[in-house]
Image (cartoon, rainbow, N blue to C red; front, side, top):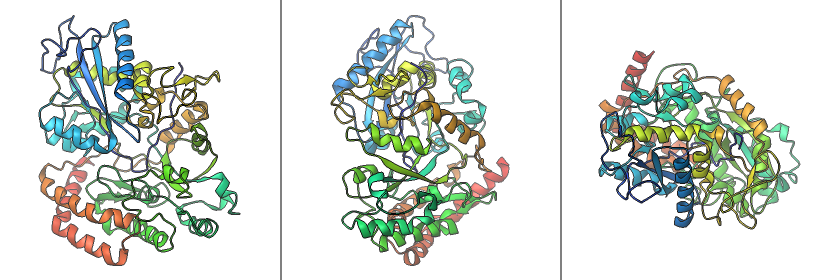
Amino acid sequence: MKLKRLLAWVLGTLMALSLAGCSGGKDTAGTTGGGTAAVDTTAGGNEAGDEISTIKISYPCLVVTPTEEGTAEAENAINKYLEEIGEKVRIDLDPIDGNNYSTQVDMQIIGGENIDIYCPLTGMDAAVQTNKLLALDDYLNDELAGAIEVMGEDFKKNCEFNGKTYALPCYKGSVLVYYWVCPKEIFDTLGIDRASIKNVRDLDPVLAKIKELYPDMAAIAPSIGANGAGNNFELARVLAGVGDYEVTNLNNGICVVGDDRTVRNMYETDYFREICDIAYGWNQAGYVVKDASVVTDANFTLVEAGRAASYIIGYAYSAESVEAMSLTKADPYETVAIPLSKDMMSPITLTWGIAYTCKDPAAAARVLNMLYTDEFVLNTLIFGVEGSDWVDAGTGDGSILWPEGKDMNSVPYTAALTCGIIGNQFKMYSMEGVTLASDIPFMADNMKNTKKSPVFGFAVDIEKIKTQTAAVSNVIAQYEGGLYTGELDPDVYIPKLLDELESAGMSDIVAEAQRQLDAWK
């Protein structure tokens, strides 16, 4: 099939996800039950010509986790293909519920289990410092050459640390546009000109009108926080965008604002204050769902269930494609998607590397390369097997559909909502109703022409501030969800947050990051 991609359920903050796995576990075509017989664990990997390594891919699944039977069918299809093309690797698919993924994979690595390819959820730099990642430099010109050629050197720079490359970034439409999405049936009753909504600050009268006409549903639903982060309305991403505050998040509560390369405590900026003020205003006005900070349903699920009327979400796609996504569901409906903001090109934090516990890193590097270059391997991992899990849409452009009478909740296998997270998004199939021809140039243009962060490629080494970053993380977790969903009064709780951050060592983090940034410049 031609290059494709699928609608991605990619939240504005995006959850950190992982790809893990090395060595044997189960018998697959051409392997023994123990994986490789005698694998060289040095940088050269498996040099024996006839040995076959099994690479376990542990990956997060959003909303739906495939069945064991469906996973086995997809795994067998990939391994049959690898045997046919003469590849001396096999794959063991290990889909994990995205809510448990971070903890599960980290514990496997800490426990010394065989892990090959994984995504460091707390940041590549932290993973390097805790001996969880191998350097990839020995494989960049051979096993990983195809992926590097696809992405280009600029993307690889995101994964350099102390002069070495430790991972590959997810290659996707990495410049997200943040849309306010509302069912067209509801929007048409509001009597509001969509052209009047130019940014998030224009939503207040819209949400007020929704509350007036639809008092039994919330006017706006929150996004679910990822990896311990609080639920939110994507306001942090929206207000950080081009033409607004233009904030580059450096993690651990620090950032740079605009073109100024001064590292700042994000929680004492005007940017953070406005996030909280907007959320608090919406909450006090009764626009949001009850207990927004702890709700566990996805924003689009709340809308489809009639519990909320709108949400904000980030996609790399055009408004037309976002509106078409709801038409691919088992119960299709039309939406209005209005752009509010666009990302800068900032450091890419979603990366994939080879774990330190990997027994055959050369083989793992070949598999990692396939996720960027091999259409069949990538799409079978994402969508499963044709006939069982998807069918050709019959439109002549290679688009796919769920089998008749099925959807993502009832097919034996799908990791469809993980697209845009693993490997090369530009090689993924597309669901009928999402136009690849228009979205590929749309994404490419955004990536090429959006404003680039003044610290693009910079990452903070937390080795000297590990104690402070852990303490600061604990403080942030106590306040973030309540402030981001407007359940906590900013006048009362931001001062408390700042006091506790200072006691936790935020000044040390800012100073150390500034020292590193000055050296990096």
